[in-house]
Length: 230
Image 1 (cartoon, rainbow, N blue to C red):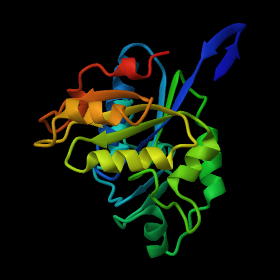
Image 2 (cartoon, rainbow, N blue to C red; image 1 turned 90 degrees about the horizontal axis):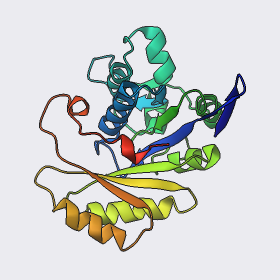
Image 3 (cartoon, one colour; image 1 turned 90 degrees about the vertical axis):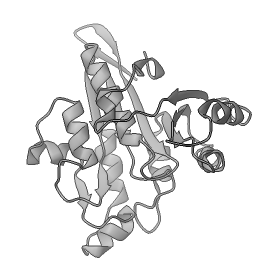
């Protein structure tokens, strides 16, 4: 995407960050990338529009994203990052139903579209995997198709991750997969072997992230900005 301001041409990059499933490392990746790009002088807009399992604690993905952006966890900022929040730790459609609420797919699309061209880098993080339902008829794959922005697919190196990743790639075959990021699983399969095997089945760029042993892994992440460099 290109923005023209004061006669100067400015490039803006937008990506949808999805995964092969839940707890795969999407938020660690989003936070690490956001914080590192900001430290390099780039403007960054990172969002997780829909989140379930919400309890307003500091451990929520939304809070981590806010901290990585250097923003306070105020109600206003939380609403900007994650306007759709549900208490039950279920898929968004089920979590919303538990509260007698409904996710209007077109409203999610509109919200995301308003935010994909705001900064040098714009990241929209999904909840769970690429095929997680948002409502009774739409999944995140449908949202990705509507937004028509490149996808970063985060996966693991655990036993079975290759099948899960190839299934996600197949589900996203109509989308532009910018990169596949293998987040090393503790005690998983050798990450280089996973990378080499996946490379036999896709032309997408494949990057690896080492397992990080700490409470705030995004703050200890080695430089990964090259994965999305302009």
